[in-house]
Structure formats: structure tokens, C-alpha cells
Image (cartoon, rainbow, N blue to C red; front, side, top):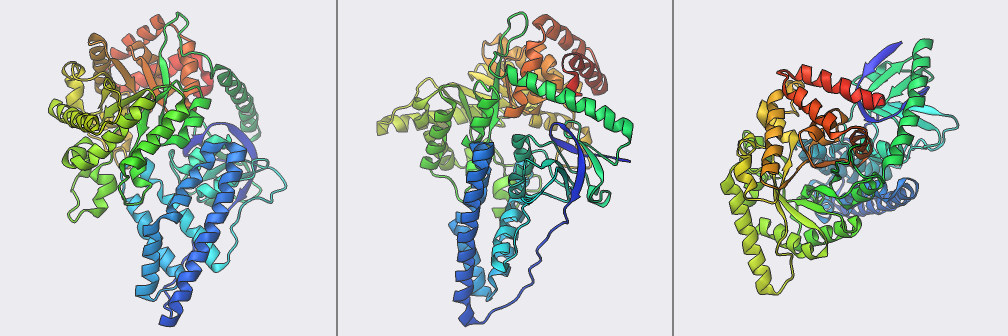
Length: 580
């Protein structure tokens, strides 16, 4: 028996027989071709692209039919990369100028793309590296004639153990027989994890060397909630997890019954639970989990999905119009560009910044590139007549920055007026509170905007001076730190004093451990990933405001994060013991 701890990315408990996949890496040696063979290599490459597009389109359609449009839509990222003209041109040029084989040119160019994504410090985007490798392998397999292992021909139930699972492999898993999976590598926000959650397959990733500890035929327990994998468990453990399995199923059924009920405490206090989205593909999943609107539309993916090109005003407008159509009258908070020099432009700079996370990023970058900023603002304002649009500026660190952003927005509205374009004149304007400087000046900031949204991920990082992506110090990143909680409390209070709304859109909002505390502090909007909504709503509906306030008062009396977490865990366990 061996117990391994990783990252639980899809909840649920499953016990079954392991099947172990070998690690796969296609190494393509550099080989040259004669000049008269170049045209043939270019033609082979484009045929491989056409075949890959055909296969992926079929996979997208089949996945959308089985698991919903939003999951099928994940494949659209792969299709978009394969249709990207600049990418195709780079491979063509590699073949022509280097006299390289099509295989080598594909591998060379795609690995440069993967490297660009890998250098991004934002976890969501850095995890797109796996998607780029997935695309590379698909095209290479087509070129060299190797068939892809699709796990489609299983005849009995299995738990898949692998070094890694590519997103397209995960989407093609036979749900009838694959009951769970665990991998050596991977992260919480990878497409593989997203697909696993949508398919309802318990999954744990980031287990390090699990594949070297499991053999085909071993009995394995996957605990997707707690990120635990047990290899060859004893009889007592199997019995214990059988009970957990039954309890989890009961809990899931309870949560499903809450989806269409209001987020209201037992004594009638209502809050709004909303969703964070990356694009329109996320909306159906959010609504199916009971989202009452979109509290955070991250627009960065519009830029990143275009692989180095800046989206036009029409690209922006079409995306926002589609999102508004999808949410059917519910509020949509659009966060203006939050890319940093660290994520998007750093690789393109002649002189990369030494510490880009504290550098020219987010609103700072927009204020330095006003034409780009105006294109996005014009699109948002044009879309504002199509629904309940709200605009939010990220990473404000001074009131002057906020006023500059508002001034540019005013310029945009005057230009639209001159052009005879309709827009909503009283569009709500908000700002993110994610820098301690503005959290401390929340009262003054509240007089400038219609709403706050607390970005807890960055607020914690900047308050504690901890880079959460740095493995050496990531353990110091803790939402329960009393200093962080005091900042959050003071921002919520400042919003209330100035009669503006306040939301939390960081990971704390979707973590059930903090629901009672945030509710008791007076938070009125929780914005989170769609699948997290039912559990948070369950806690809200199971308590009273008086109890939540008592919890908040007690928590704010503690002076260590350890005391905070222990107390919150015990209080939350009373409501949803299945969560811990």
C-alpha cells in the first residue's frame, strides 16, 4: 500500500484497476531535403494540417454532443492554432529557408510557440503549453503515419495512470470504462483538468512519480477532492472509501437540487453568486451551475488566442456581443486587458523587464498604449447597448491611474458620439482591489467608481510579498493571513459606507472554506469558477447572517493563519462534512 498526494482537479472517489500508459515523446531529428524536394515537403505539411483539422473538428463535435458545447469548445483553441496564418507561414519558411523536413519544421516552430506560453507567469496561460504540445504531436503523427492511442477500445472498467494526459486524449476518453485518472504532472487550470471536471471523472494530477509506483492491474483509489491516490489499499481503506464514495454521490445529488434556488441565508439575506469566465465557451457551464451573472470576464484570452496579433475592435465587439447573448440579460462585468509584460509582450521585448510582475502590466500597459486601450473600450461601449455591461479596470495602484483610465473612457464616448454610435451613457464603472495601496485607500477610491471587485490572488501575493508561481515560496501564499483578511474586511466596509457594491472574484470566493467568513464580513457578490457555485450556495443557504457574522468576528480576533484555517474548517465541516 502506498499513499500519494497530488492536486485534486475533479472531485469524486473511485476504486478500480489501473492501466498505465507509457510516457510518449516524439523526437524528431533534424534532416535536410534537396531544394527540389521543398515543394513536396510544404505540400505534405499542408495535407497534415488539413487532416488534423478534420480529425479535431470531428472530436470537437463528438465531445460537444456527449459533454456539452463548452467542453467541445476547448478544442477550438487547437483548431485556432492550426488555422493561424502566421504559424503556417513560419513552418513554410522553416522548410524553405532551412531545407528542413516537414516533421522537423513543425517540431521546431511548435516548440518555440510552447516556449512562449511556458514563459508566461500566469498559471492559466502557462498551462496552455500542454495544448501546444498536443497540437504538435497530432500533426507529427499525421506526417509520420503513427496512429494516436485513443483508449477507445477498452472492454472493462479502468483507472488510467499516466505521466501526462493531453487535453484531446482526455476529451476522447471512453467514459463508459474510464472511471478516473491520475498523472505525474499537470495543474488545476489546465484544459485536461477542465475536461475532467466537465466529464465528471475523478482526477488527481501533479503526483510527481506516480507512474513508477503503479503497475497495470494494481488496485487504485482516486480521491479527486483531496488530491489523494492510494496504490494497492488494504481492506479497511477500501471499506472506508466505499463509504466516502456513497457520501459523495449523495452530496452531488443535493448540490444539483440547489442550482436553481437563490443564494439566500436561512434568515432571508440574499447575495449574488456569479461566474468567472475566459470566453463565451464558459457561459453554458456557468449557467448550468446556477450563475446569476458574470462577475469577471477575463479578456486576455482574446489576445493570446490570436497568437501574437492584437484583436481588432470588431474582434472585441463580436466577443462581447456573443457573451451578452449567452447570458440572456444577466450582468456581465468586462475586465479590461490584464495582460502583463510578463505574460504576453515580454518575449517580444528587446529588453525584457527584470521583474515584470511589478512592471509594465495591466492598466499600466494600457495607459502606455492608448490606441490599443481605446480599441477595447470602444468595443465595450458599443456592446453596452446589448445588455447589462459593466466595465472594470484591473491593477489600479493610484487614484490618478483610475482617473486617467476614466478620462480615456470619456474620450472614447465623445468619439462615439461624434461617429453617431449608440452606447450606454451611465455604464457602471468599477475597479479591482488587488494592490494593498488602494485597499488602504478604499474610502477615497469608492467615491470614484460604482463597484469594487477584490482580486484576492494578487492582493495576497502583493500583501505577503510571495510569488505564488515560485515553488520555493508558494507555501507562504495563504488567504487566511490576518493581514490579508483585515484588508478584505476594510474594503468591504468602505464599499458599504459609500453605498457601492463589492465582490470577490479571486479563488477565495469559490473556496467553501471562506464562504462563511466572507458572508459575515458583508460581501454581497461572490464570483468564481462555474463548478464551484453549488457548494458555495449550499453553505450560504445553510446558515444565517447572525452565524456568519459571529464566525467573522471570531476569525478577526485571531493573529495567525493557522488559527483561522482550523476554526473555519471546523465551522464549515458542520455544514458540508463531505468537503473536508
